[in-house]
Length: 347
Image (cartoon, rainbow, N blue to C red):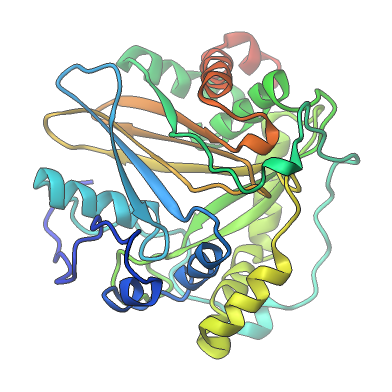
């Protein structure tokens, strides 16, 4: 992502707002309907920070920066970080697959449900008493150019995009480390809606999502078909309609709903984010990780910068999450993503 873009004339997106009143911090930023949910989370004591890692000067570990999800999504936050801290203008941000928002009658028209695997999510460790603890600092692996190309090759052999291949292998790696092999895992798959919706500026939250279920016997092609079916049902637009209820309910209404709807610890698996490909002169690599929560305890992500892919993970303590277990997961994820046998199993 390169080019010229108009950067917003707002207070720094990376100003520390932890110590100031929440309302004061929010008043300094563009209004963000989706961000209202993260404001509600913060009022419940849940971490609302995204983590951005920057690899440079040949270092083996990234320099970490944090940014509240109340004011931007991952793409917007990362582009602003690169501008403010590194002077790099990313240009116009990538647009989504849809060019306009469908009419609400089309969005909510009854459609056949998507078949899902039978079974339930099964954690190897689940400690609800740790719900008030915070997730650890993310851990990440910076792959080589050859490894990055190898993943693209494995994805082609499996007949799917690298984004779907990496979600499928992340799910497989989770079964080897954190969940039972027979577990049916619930993943949130973010969907970029830029180009079809208009926020206060292009850096605010423009992402909806699909809720996916993956079972142990599903291959990458089955995942591809499930995602296509959910897009056809306009589930990402249904989710967007719910995420923007703050337009009518206000912050107090969203606070109530968030408190009422927050899931029990370990209720869902977590989120998978793929932030695409970036070209930033002078950097070795980039990564970005979502906040996660006790109800969504696994936050995994991937992206490519200057031809090198990163894999990142952040785990919540309710599922035994710590940096060591996260590194174990990442090593399994890397191995499976590069495995020719894994791609061959799709045939």
